[in-house]
Each structure stands twice: as structure tokens, then as C-alpha cells.
Image (tube, rainbow, N blue to C red; front, side, top):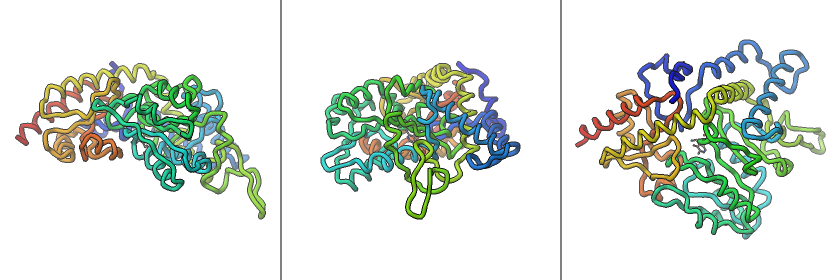
Length: 400
Ligand code: PMP
């Protein structure tokens, strides 16, 4: 178990009693990340890629260093595989609009799964509607595991993309991405991985896994809001056309037309989120200092403990029981509305999520309209789980 890392996170100095169990929504930021962001504003603030003076050159250098750092973090040596975006949602929408939209023809299909976050579902649904093609949706079993044979049967030689999450933000299911990528590639379909929930503590080596597209957000991996990543494999980089037009993405502009830079520079029109990128770089340093393996072990231990404790409470029903679960547990308590559960826990300063977690099709599949959700990170400890269970017991007594 990782001890004492809570001290790295200033939010807990401000709120010492806070039991934060909502890291799947957003993680807190360690001091080093906050310092990196502030330091940029205080000492280094300047626009990038535009100035020839020292301050601007320095900012450009640091921004581009992070691009290479991100590439290496996901197993690539090529910084140009990495575009900075606002987050997972924007990264996925770019693949939908800048890559896929122009290559869809009647009879094609896109394959996704019922367990996706809306960010990895609606973009495909909109494309399917607009281009009159089929959106094929792989189901999950009652444990919340993908039914692999059924997913496999959906992929064929007209599949233009297979898009799935590594970890479900509602069920906590960890998908066997190696196997899923293999199934897609057998039919020559490219793959998009939504790594929003896994990038923090799962090894994602894009080269070994032969991933075509991958999306994730800074704020779920101790970085700032408003910064995310789109990874695009070498062989598809030339296929991504600009989706947003403006400064910073051009080779030349005349009154007769414009020619654009190559990926990733054709994605970053306008002034980018420079301090966000530097904060993301600092978050990667922090993760690497602790090590993904340690983070995974810590979160895994807490989750296992919490699942065991919840199983003792007959009134608590967990949504799914996946073979391989990450640090996320969705649950309901008797007939109590999840918002009431979350409000009750809030009085004990326990922060959990309540609602549909942007996975409405999945919740409908399980016959629920909302759940409460607890999710863990490195600043949590067993005592946080104990506090959650104690408060749930009081809730059950109070409601009886
Ligand atoms: N996919 C998954 C699996 C997520 O958990 C989230 C965030 N809840 C997203 C996509 C969207 O991420 P963002 O809001 O940072 O764009």
C-alpha cells in the first residue's frame, strides 16, 4: 500500500475531513502539478510557436518537450503521434469528424459496446445517422463483462472502426484490449481505445498493442482540466484532416486557398492550452515517480476490500461483478434514490458520484436509471472505505 501520498495533494490540507471517492470523475492534483502550472504563469508566460524572443522560445521548447514525454509515456518514440486536445471527448470527436466521416459509404458499419461513456458512443451514433450506416453495439453479460463472441460476430470487412473503452467508468470492468484489438485487426478494422479511466495505472504501449487511435484526459491522471491527448498511429497520421480552422495550423494561406501542416500540428488551431500541457507533463513525472504498478496495486487493494465489505450489506447491490475490476464500484441501496445516497454520505464528508455517469444505454441495459459510484485513487486508504461502509450502514438503518 502507498502511505502518506495524501500529503502531496493540497486539497486535503484545505479539507482535512474530506473522503474523496470520485476520482473516476476527476482526480485531485498534486502540489508538483499545481506548481508547474503556476510557475508558467509567474515566470514563463508567453505564447508559443510564434515569438523569436527568449520567453516564447522557452515556452515553445517546454510545450514540445511534453509532446515527446506523452509519446514515450504511451510507448511511442515519435512526438508527432500526439495531438493535444481539450480532453477525451474532443479527441474522440476528432477521430469521428476528421478521420471517419469522409470515408463512410452505405453498407459500412462502426462497432462499439454498450458499456461506453457517451463520449465514445454519441459521436458514432451521429455519424451512423448522418451517413445511413449501421452502428453495431456489443453487449455485456450480467457481470458486466463484454460478450466477446458477440462482439467478434459484429466485426466484418465493412467495419470502418472498432471503438471501446479500456475501463468502464460505470462498471469498473477492465477489458482485455489485447484480445479486442486482435479481433478487430483480423478483419482489418482500425481500433480506437478510450483510455480515460486506464491511462493512470495501466500500461498502454501503443506500438506493442498496435493501437490506431487512443484518447485520454489530463484531469483523470492528476493533470489539469482542459487538456487531453489524441494518439494517432504513424500510418494514419496523414489521414487526419483539420476540423478547426485558424492560426497555427497552416503551411501557406493565399486568397485562393490554404495548405495545412501535417498531424499533429494541423489539430491545434489557435493558441493552445500551454499551461495545461506543462501541467500534464508534470502529472506524467509524478505518475512515473510512483510507478503505475504501485498505483494499480494500491487502488486494487482498496477496491477489493470495498467490494468485500459491500457484499456484507444485503441492502447494497453492486452493478456488475466483472472478472477484472478496476477502482470503480457502482451500487444501489434498496429503493433509495442514488442522489439521496450521495447526499446522505455527503453529510459525513464522503464524496461519491450519483447519476447515470454518462452511460445511459448501459444503465438501461441493467434496468437502472441511476446508481451511486465510489472510485479510488492513491490518496485513499482503507479508513476511507471503512468510513463509507459505516455511513452506508447508518443510511440503511435511517431508511428502514
Ligand atoms: N470516457 C470515459 C471512460 C470517461 O470516464 C470519461 C470521463 N468521465 C470520458 C470518456 C470523457 O472524458 P472528458 O470529460 O475528460 O472529455
